[in-house]
Length: 332
Image (cartoon, rainbow, N blue to C red; front, side):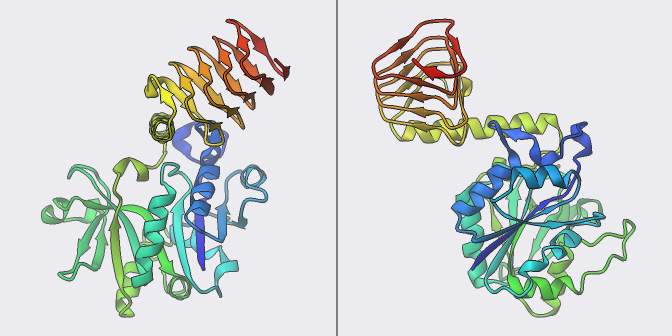
C-alpha cells in the first residue's frame, strides 16, 4: 500500500500574507491541491495533509481529496509526521512530502515509492552548486546514506558535496512510526526533526538510501512570492510542453498559461498570451488568437476565437468569436 503525508501546517511568514502558504496558487490552483493530484497519479491510496495555520481554509480546499491531521503547536518536521496517527498501523510505504513544493511530478513520486521497495528510508536529494546552504548527503562506500550534515555544521570537505537534502522522503511505514518514538527535541529550538531518523535507522541497522531528483527545479520549495513566480513559470512551461508533445501547436510556450484541469484536442493552435483555466475544454482544429482568456468554457471543433474573454460559455462548432467579446455565460 502506498501512503503519503503532506506537511502543510506552516504560515509562510515570508509570503507576507494572511493566506496559508500552501493555498497560494500555482497555475490557478492551490499548490497543495496540485501536490495531492500528483501523489494520486503516483498511486498513493491514503494521503494525510498535516495542517496547522489556517487549517480550516486548507481543509475546505482539500475536502474529499484526502484525510487530515492537525499539528498544533508546530514543533518541527518530525512532530508534523507524528500527527498522522491514522497511518500508524498500516503496512506499505509512506512518502513524506512538503506542502510548498508544487512542482514535484507524479513520475518523481513514483520513483521515490519504487526506491523504498529496497530500503527502509529513502531521501529525495538534489544536486546543486556548492554555495547553496542546504544539508549535505554523506554516503557510505556502498552508496547508502551515513548522515545528513547541515550546512552550518559541515566541514569544508562536506560543503564541497553537491548532493543535498530536498526535504522529502519515503519510508517503510511501520519503521517510520517506530522511529518517530525515538526522536528527541534536545536542540536549541526544542523541535523534533525528521532528519534525526537517519541516525535512528542506522542505529537499528535499517537501510537508508538516497534518490537524486532528475530535475532540480521540481523540488524547489516556495517560501516567498519570488519563488511562487518561479514555480508558476516552471509549471506553465511543463504543461505547455506536455500539450505540444500531444499534437497541440503552441506558438510561444513562455506566454501561454494552461491550467491543470484544461483539456485540448488535436490540431488546435494557441497563439501568444492566451490564458486557459478552470475546466475549459478545447476541441479539434480550434484556433485561439492572442490575448484570449477562457475559463470553464467549452470550445467545439473548428472554432476561431479572437482576443476574447469568456467564462462559463459554450462556443459552437466552426463559429467565430470576434475581438473584444466579453461574456460570462451562455451559448455562442
